[in-house]
Image (tube, rainbow, N blue to C red; front, side, top):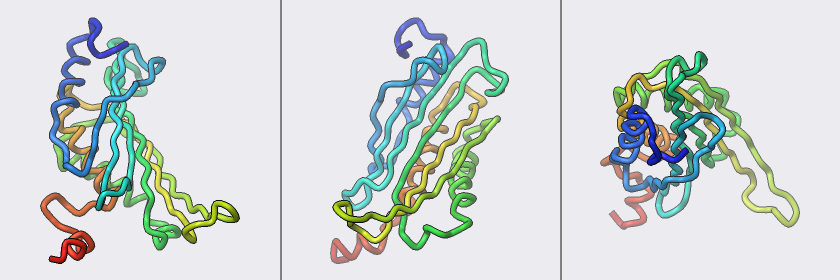
Length: 189
């Protein structure tokens, strides 16, 4: 069901919070089609993260709302995310990468005051080597983050800001206000 058709007030507030949150200029957000079979009400955002003009990470954040609630959700509203990014080849075998990637989410939620419960997810790291007609860079390393959590309030602006912080970490962006050395060198600084 679309966010404009007779939706419950809690869902309407949640969508407004997602639409109204401020994001970094390197993150391009757009409303995308939401899955319609997971909950009576759904809303979704897609994101592309740019670093030095290149797409370095993509993600989806899906808001699900069921006024009847779900025991597994521990509430009536659930946020679900999927993020993927290409990483530096030297991270391919790092056994700590999944644990570090998980803290990108949990730390971002805590830092932004995005109260939550029932958090869970998976981190997958893959290495691909191209051959023959697809030959290219020696290896590509990707990380996928799939997670979901139940927000404690209907105001989701802080959750979107936390999600964008996690996207930034996954994409390897420097903290806001800090220039990367490669970007400064390209500008001749």
